[in-house]
Figure (cartoon, rainbow, N blue to C red):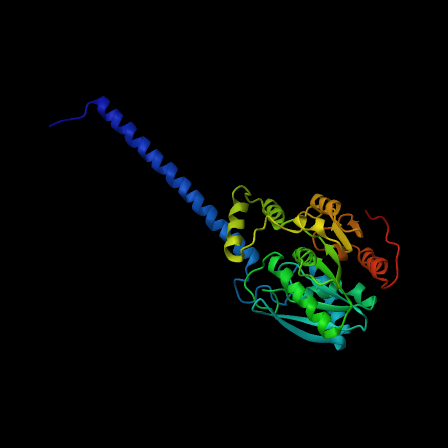
Length: 338
């Protein structure tokens, strides 16, 4: 009977150990890659897909007390003006899209564009300054939100085409001469992509942005950092899923088109916005191509909560913007702007 001597046994053991270590390393790397793919898919679907019944409906999207106060005040505006309201509907890109049109007898109309996960009910809160100035108000359920059809949020890309379709509808049906866009977060991004599009009609004549991000890649990075999640590889993988499902990249956004804007803009931003970071907002303002641009900072303001923080300053900024550029309403002193 043949027995391995101690040297042969040692060499065999070392060789086996190296093979096991190599296998474990490769297996670990494979599982790491798989886990990143799965995690990135889950983040993408949970963030940008209406993947279950009831998600992104017309009910409040969270139960935060400040948010619920905002929502309740908006519902008050809706109830006070319900006699002025007409439910409206358009078909665009094969999707049924729904909204509400409030007539105040003016020649101007604002289209209010809510952020991700929000329906037209959220937009009521932002209608106050416009209705006071006699502007008609069109609030909409973005695609994949509220009653509107659609599965994915495209962070403003396809939504911008819907905005143009809504503007053409309002102009044709109600005869308004000027249409303004008022967008919050993703709504602001969609509005910016719409108003700088070559397909945008001239009567879409200005835009107000609240917490507009530079591109969704930056806002997604901020969300991951805020939740203490890794960003390395994760952002590229999330972008891969977005391209897979929507044909768009989240690395492109308002910062890439704002230089071509040739219509009046009012930008409002909070100094404490941890998602749409203030430094990007200032950069966009600096490169904005409009000859009529105004920036209003809200000290201590957080993401999408500027009007809740200082309603008078917020509304006065809008009323001044309308008066200075379109002769609508009355100019009010609001303090320091950029």
